Image (cartoon, rainbow, N blue to C red):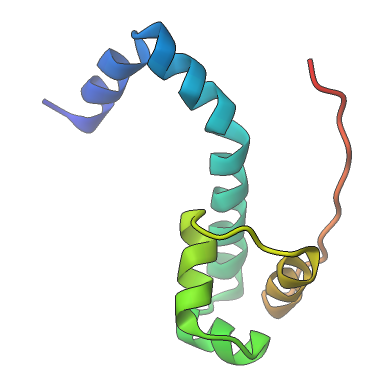
Length: 92
């Protein structure tokens, strides 16, 4: 059974689908963090030096196991050569 098939089966369950939908923004944000680092061509080790932090902090941030401050997010973005813009959107 492929991962895609397993995901489709799981998402057929309405409770699982509701939880998945609630986490979608978090998944998208984590993907954006990883994309910034990849575009910068940086390893976690290189990023930790730029941010003056520990690799474990970078790893937790990129896994979504960390509730970062705005300052941490700005440091991450700047270390990758990006600006960070927060834009509020009304919830639907």
